[in-house]
Amino acid sequence: MNNVNKLLKAYNENTLLNKNFLYESIAFHGIGNAYNKRWLGNIVPADVLKLSLKEAIEIIVTLSESGIFYDKFPNHIETPNYGDNWGRFANYIEINNRAIGIMDKGCTCSGIISTIKLLTAIPPSAKSFSNCIILSQIWQNIYGDAYEKGPFEENSIYGIRLNAPYSNNIIDYSINLSAEDQLKAFVDLAHFRGIKVGFRHVISADQIKISNKKGDIVFDWKNPKHVDLYIKECEKLVNLGFDCIFIDSAKHIGGYDMYNYTGVGALPEYCQMQYILHEIRHRCKRTDLSFVCEKSSDDFTRYKDMGFNAGTDYITGDNFDAVKNLSDSLKYMRDYAPGVEISNDNNEGGMSYEQRLNRINTALFAYTFASDKLPSFMQMNDLFPLRYDTTTHHLMMTNPSYSTDGSSQSHFENLFAKDDGKEYNRRAGEIFAYALEK
Image (cartoon, rainbow, N blue to C red; front, side, top):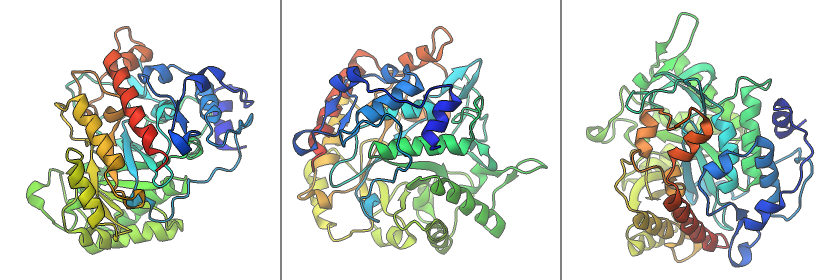
């Protein structure tokens, strides 16, 4: 039995799927030759997060680009094939899967189930370049994993625990299905949607703990056993089908630009990171993995030779011509490129809707040929605007509930902007619709 059907069974659902004619009729379409690429636009996330798991899966299958409706989810799903260097051109969309988890009695869980539901509203990939969802959390965080806290109490995702079960924030441990099977079901559904998937994590040593029988110990990049454990943890996720690894603070590896380093603890040496990235690719037999370096500089060869495919926060999308000129100048660099930023995980607010939409338009269209497009980076907030008094970074650092009645549905309704957020989502969807045939 495939993992999607296992997940349905775990929720006591029948695996026979029914076409959803309502959502088929209101779905957004790509423009021109991309007409068959469909997703739910003109929404707020609560519209899809209120769905049952089975309803979400039925919508995903209903919106199949092939036009074929599968009354049983297919047994074999492969990652969308954009070649080995797809990561050099991709649009990376980070989803804070903890923030959209189920909150109940002061605890958070099932973020991966909510992310499956949100898949229905993520635009599929274009003809020439992929969209890739980056999950903010997979591993446990060390500041209170699974605990809902007040809006100003630290519960940061920027601290991880290895050699432990996957995060309670993300997995539904109340059902009779392994964490690995739940993650694999998400990966298969994303791939069915034509979307790549990856995960973010920190590499600052003092922000990593290793769980053992005697209690947590601090990670040490000089300890070969710790390095091997890190590689194995990444390997496990890649073997579940993840396509991309987003590495926080990677710009500073080897002591580079440490004046601007804000992490805590040592980082890998340059040659050590070369070995690590090579080893993950080698052990997983995946030449198509994308490694993304958080932050980048104009020393492009440094990141390319380390094994990265894309670097973030190099140029914003504010100036269309500047991005187009950069794309043209780098068109012969086919395995690494710096990226166009809409916003990043450190975003503290202050950007208008118009500025964000302009940046998305630049990221998706600023090139002479689509085959020369630069990678781009955006947050959940750039597709689904958050409420006015919170920000992307705030939700990375804390885990508050915005529910007014104690229910998760109320949290979903109040976490995001409402009428203006829906209108923004419609306008962002129209920009993507024109890009999908490129």
